[in-house]
Length: 173
Image (cartoon, rainbow, N blue to C red; front, side, top):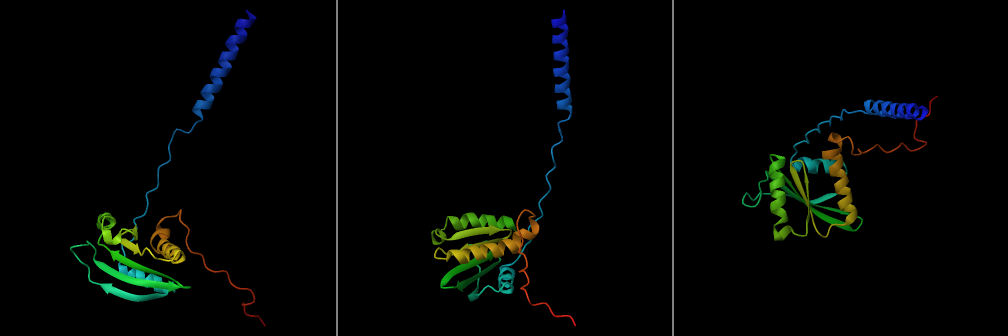
């Protein structure tokens, strides 16, 4: 009889523990926060941003958009040369991100651009020449992330100001 009571109490304690543990589990799943829409920019806006960031742009050419080849509204080609390395970039801007994605697929199937790196960001496509210096490709990617993505994606780092150098503070009388 004592064994029966002990078994009954053990089952009650285990059952109660299970019910308490189950009732304390959070069954509400978190609601995802909507992502901000990325800005619509022109190819010229991208070049202006790079110039403000002191990127040494050369051989800048505004090209007429070949409407038979692209759905783009603007096409700009330029070079960046730094420390013996060089890269050529082609920036196409579009009325909408959907049109840019459509041309992204079209460009990747084009033999002329088969070795180029093609990066879609919002409503632009950035083509990077196959002979681009790795450090310039990295720099360009960082600038484009800072300009077009980081302000709208909180999980991405934003540029930080350079720390002030010591000894530059004005002396107080």
